[in-house]
Image 1: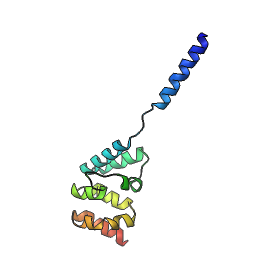
Image 2 (image 1 turned 120 degrees about the horizontal axis):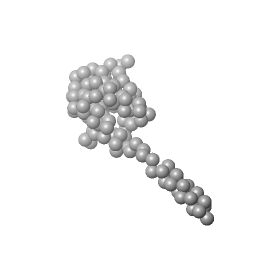
Image 3 (image 1 turned 90 degrees about the vertical axis):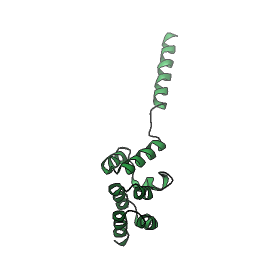
Image 4 (image 1 turned 90 degrees about the horizontal axis):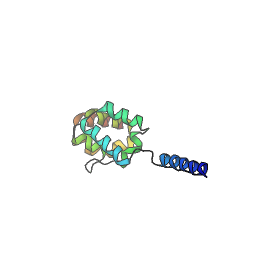
Length: 119
């Protein structure tokens, strides 16, 4: 009887530890990416995306920072390094769709976007 009770207790503890393993939350990912763009920290953004096995193309549509997409937010915060990284990694179609908002803001980002679309 003691062996059965001990075995069932160990099995229950094992199952609960597997179920409650911490996972990356979508809100945490979005918040971190927005913070890196606001701080214009390209190195930490690249490292964060790589460690979470994410690509800018896959998360671009799902993340809004202060009600703006990532490129518009980069323009608002004058984040040239992270904005240029995103322009390089996004498809030409997405960059051309956001070209008007880029041209009204930061000139270096507008130049990078024009070069990306025309290439």
